[in-house]
Image 1 (cartoon, rainbow, N blue to C red):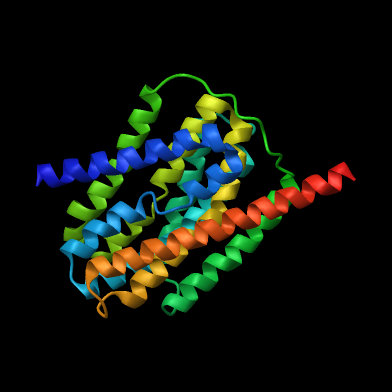
Image 2 (cartoon, rainbow, N blue to C red; image 1 turned 60 degrees about the vertical axis):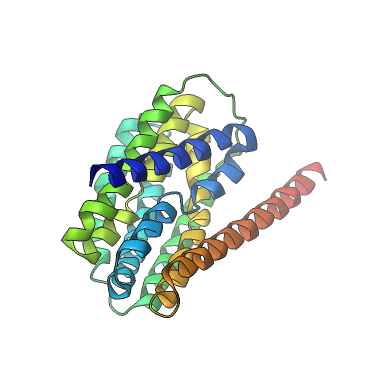
Amino acid sequence: MLQPMLFKLLATAGIVILVALAVARVGPRLGGILAGTPVILGPGYFFILREQEPAFVQEAVLSTLHALVATLLFTVCFVITAERLSALRSLGLSCLVWLPAALLALHLPGGLAWALGAYLAVLVVAEGINRWLRLEQPVVVASSGWLDLLLRGLLAGGVVSLATTLGARAGPEFSGVIMGFPAGILTIAWALHERYGAEVARMTVSMTQRGMLSLLAFCTVSYLGVGQLPGMLVFLLSLVASMLTSALLFMFSLWRARRLYARKAA
């Protein structure tokens, strides 16, 4: 058991570290979209689809979708509080918001449609809060240091290892909720707050709210495809749907940024 858990941990840690480093080169706008990609779900469901039966996978995916509603509230709390609180305090408060929200989300009525509708409704509220806060695109000033990124990457890897190896024994609902825990966003926000400052972290996490539409695409294709297609084909199709969603979000973000720049120039 230890060898598969170690492989899952290290594979996920590497992905999280690469995404955090990418923000220093491409900026918070694209960095937030990257952070919203299936950094945790991708490796996690790769192993779940290989190891579990279709019924288990489908129920786990639905639980993950419910947990993503709570994750969106996590990001809202961080964006609001990170300006005045330290990274640890802001993230700790956000986790306290996530836990009861995730438990309540499990009791949402209906199936896939209700879960998607709940997320989109909260996303509209989050967008309104971001406009009210008037977040600006900050300049990223890179700093040295790998230890913090390594430690936080290993934390994210531990979540995937727990959800896919130990969580599977506790049932699909628990495994799916653990997969929905924002370990990737937490570690990336923590690293960015410490390395580049609160404004970079807040802007990146606010963009992650839209970027998480990529996770909805991933989960939707997985939910609909499992049991109908081979597991690895479902994973590949889910990944393609996720990446296409991220690409569309990036193009929309560029178009919006150019439009705002043109207005300011005029």
